[in-house]
Image 1 (cartoon, rainbow, N blue to C red):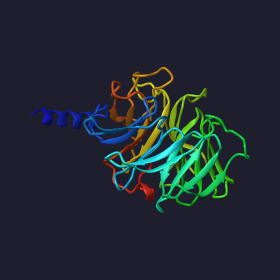
Image 2 (image 1 turned 45 degrees about the horizontal axis):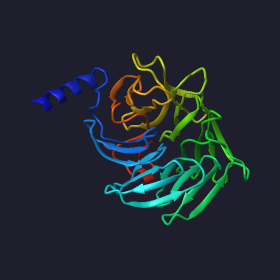
Image 3 (image 1 turned 90 degrees about the vertical axis):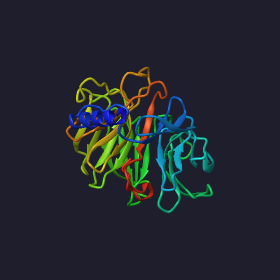
Image 4 (image 1 turned 60 degrees about the horizontal axis):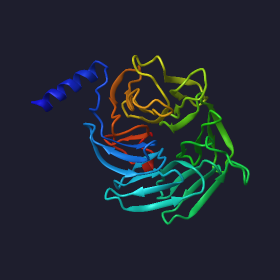
Amino acid sequence: MKSLLTLILTTLLCHTGQAAENAGHPFACTDYAQGKVFIVSADGAVEWEYPAKNCDDIWVLPNGNLLFNTGRGVREVTRDKKVVFDYQSKSEIFACQRLENGNTFTAECNTGRLLEIDPAGKIVKEVKLLPEGKDGGHLYIRNARRLANGNYLVCHHGAQVVTEYDPTGKVVASIPAPGGPHSATRLPNGNTLIACGDQKSETGPQVFEADKSGKVVWSVRNGDLPGIKLAFMTGLQRLPNGNTVMSNWLGHGKFGTAPHLMEITPDKKIVWSFSDHKTMKTISSVQLLDVPGDVTKGEIWH
């Protein structure tokens, strides 16, 4: 009877556009502040966790393994916690991605190197965005993605811009991202979905979609979601139904002040949210596990 009532309540909440707290999606996520990655069930229970210092990006691979960054590296771990891939660097790393050919893409924040690494840990491609010996600093690169056309989409957090580079490192496009971009993904329609942080700007923390010319065609900012304060927008995922899942990073003295995760409709209604401030502090990246698709083929827009 309890489960039936829960199902009815969840359905009513979703249809009325209210948040169905802790009910709806299983997901994998990173908790930057605690240095852990989690798998969480649809009812909000933690089913699996693993230590990962300064974790900021995560993927659930087709084989069920988890790929995530580890502060100064990238690691792939099986569900029984066996490490099957491990790249370590002297540079801070906040991004990772498994490619269809089995290689792993990452972006080194301090060195400004975009790297593709084979399964044995050998660097097979390197693109340098900074002069040799120059340190980009802690804010130079957050998330980054290798695109289907071979270009790279890079979030330059400190410069408050998302830049697309060709395979040689030449700039082909730039999108202003006030607040400081943390994550960006290229959507099937050619637009770019971007999550921005809390740097001083007129917009404040936001998630927005820009078209091919860089024009903002959709956004969520403070004031758009009644009763919820956006703190620092980090992870995101566009769903096949057009909704957007976003993570509200609650660091910088804002622990426990808002939901960790929210699913927003195109007309900015919350249909699902997640909050567990006892177990987690700052969710920085999320991937829903009930959305089908091969991440190595670009079928998950995250």
